[in-house]
Amino acid sequence: MSGSGVRHAACAVLLAAGVRASAAGGTLAVLNKGDATASLLDLGTGAVAATVPTGEGPHEAAASPDGRIVVVSNYGTRERAGGTLTVLDVAGARAVRTVDVGAGRRPHGLAFLDARRVLVTAEAARALLVVDVERGAVEATIETGQEISHMVAATPDGQRAFVASIGSGTVTAIDLASRRVLAQIRTGAGAEGIAVAPGGREVWVANRAADTVTVVDAAKLSVVAEIPCASFPIRVAFTPDGRRALVTNARSSDVAVVDVASRKVVGRMSAALSGAGGEGRLLAFEGATPIGVVVAPGGARAFVAHANADAIAEFDLATGKVVRTLKAGREPDGMAYTAVEVRAR
Image 1 (cartoon, rainbow, N blue to C red):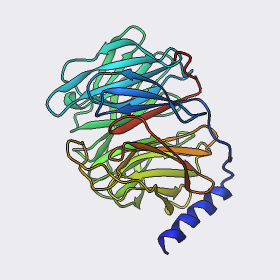
Image 2 (image 1 turned 90 degrees about the vertical axis):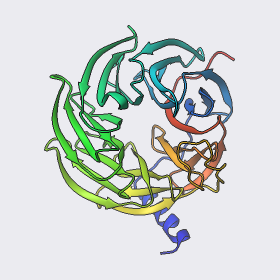
Image 3 (image 1 turned 30 degrees about the vertical axis):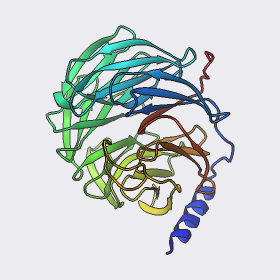
Image 4 (image 1 turned 180 degrees about the vertical axis):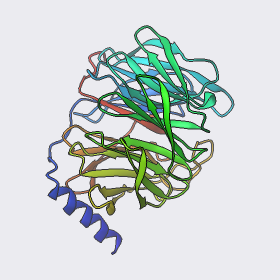
């Protein structure tokens, strides 16, 4: 099938899934790794409502259940390993707290566990942290024992967490009540992007070096499927109805649309964005390098951060086309959506 045919197929299957065609409102928090800032984008206008300083190398973001705050992991630079989280007040467009999680621990992946606690991967410590961001304290450290424990996802009931470790090519399943490791599941080389499907029955893992996506049974903790997905699959996100998964492919500069039921790539979406060059950037690819992906509530739109193009492409999932190109700062990557709007201007 030709490239245009593949894109057309993606449009058809997404329309069949009943995706709403309305645009999202609210705020998109975008982390700019090269600037050590977070841009708060007004999705009504597409403009930057505010830019807030963070720590060095902000990599991932997570919005609280009520959307009032966004937590940022300050990973650090190549020379200096980070050890803090920045807590942002969205409406006030300001940093309200810096949480110390341990010098040099390189905090990265984030997921809210409840209204005040977040799960944070700590690469250099080979661990998952439970952090109370209101008290500003690390509540627990759970060792994964794996190399480069990078991203984390949790089941909707908050009972289990899953940590993807790039260096080990594994997913660590953790019981959050007892805070113990249940299993080490081998998925593929470069296991990085991870998401729990709506309903919590499956965990999908993007293995960037293997060019595959692995599907794990969240209850049995076993691999049930492997999906080819070139090239350099790095993040995965589901539509709210759980029928489609979007996988960003950093090297091929596109987004794979995967039908969850059939486990097949049914289309590819791409943005006509040029890379700014790899010098001084984390991933020195020639293309635009899509990484972070956020699906808006309702499933109408997806926002994809292109780190080497310094831009965010907003895709209409009913057509598979880019409807807007948003600008934030240098080397955008991690993002979080919240319905809360910025009041401070």
